[in-house]
Length: 281
Image 1 (cartoon, rainbow, N blue to C red):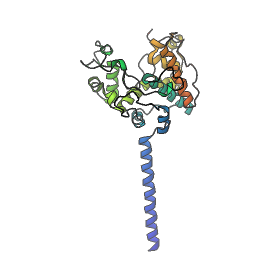
Image 2 (cartoon, rainbow, N blue to C red):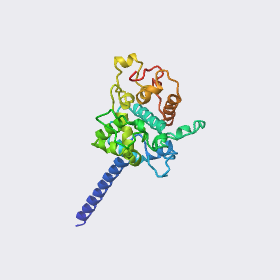
Image 3 (cartoon, rainbow, N blue to C red):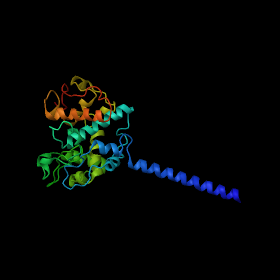
Image 4 (tube, one colour):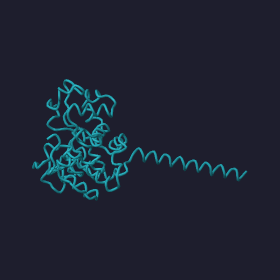
């Protein structure tokens, strides 16, 4: 009888251990990201949401993690150095788009990423971001498609395409573009979607930083090579590449170098786009 009792107790203890392990795994899968934990997130963005008048945390680590689960390829390809470099490029890009630092405060300027949720000049709407000739993703009367979210998604065709591909209905965001400033997971998802989705003739930012993009003959002739310079060209090449001297150009690159330093990773080759011809030109 004693042996049977101890065997029963041992089986019960084993079951408890196994169940505890399952719970731990599920919690880890649901609440963390392999390259970036919450502590580091808070260190990288000490002034997060500082420009939000509601004073409620919007760009949370949890929202970012939940959004990454929609895109399994995001920061998951290549060796550890490649993944870390891509993370630096992504964080630099969203920080540049949403930054609120004082350019004169060079010691802290790059700590102000994810400060704003939308384009300040358009908080009351900007009609010039509506392409009324687009029949597939037509703008909705009374709605504004100005820059919103970490990547500052703009224009009705981008809102509609993201909504269709990720949310399953193009009208979700076309009718309610402010979801990008009220739903943090969708807001981060829009940024990651832009990052991993190629829009011809441009490759995706992910393909470039993950080492998957092989420049075409036209790309090579235009000086486009894998590296952060190509990211600048994809995101805003018409205003930042091809020898154009601009503050945007300088600070986007400085953000990247700052995040490479923070993440302790080499920035890699071809980090500028001065000699690259912008797409569409």
